[in-house]
Length: 321
Image: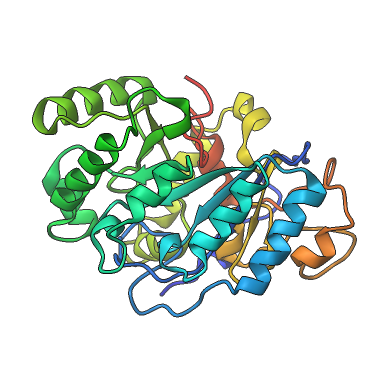
């Protein structure tokens, strides 16, 4: 796979600094039941990396010490980590809001038959990836039959109360483009998703999040292979909006990899671009316990333009309408 970090220039993206930390995002491992072409993590069924329970205990201690209000769980398929449910229970007992970044098809994996019920019983917010409301497009990006499985999973979540306006059972869908282009307007696309999925499958959800594809990991490698990398970067830079800088997710979130090392965001994690903190080459959760990150500079390179181009893009969707 092509490495894109050497192609990402330092110094072009505006310098930004942190505010108060609100969200701790944990990557529980790279194992996944799918191998999506856009995946910046390059996750798949054969990946073996996974977070240990000891590292999760450090994360729980950090949640309490830093008074972080939201725990954002991602992967791979985070639910495949054997300690996933323990972590969710411990965080919820501490009054922390938990988000599960779910690929939907995991709900039909052997051993996960009761996963939807577990999530609902703990009031876990489900953020589900569904890159299109058309089956052929989803299957092209994620694998044959994934769309039909996803529809059954959404119907199961709806039956448990998800996606029906209850803030305790919030269900969001995530759209990302099929190739090297920016997402369309989030509000209009959400209306199209709701109309199509409701009419054809009786599926409802609370909100749609549009996320730009990052030129890192598997997607970045595909861009390099097709000779599209530099054109894509040029388009991101041309579409940059200064107003989006105020709302980028790295200002209030940190990302932790499966080994317990800390990064400014999930994308920097995949690039191996470490957080800058008092001269540390690598920062672990243990070292972070004694630091207030407010005002700390954020490590940036050219890929950051994917977060500020057009309407902006973050793990929470578009930054502006």
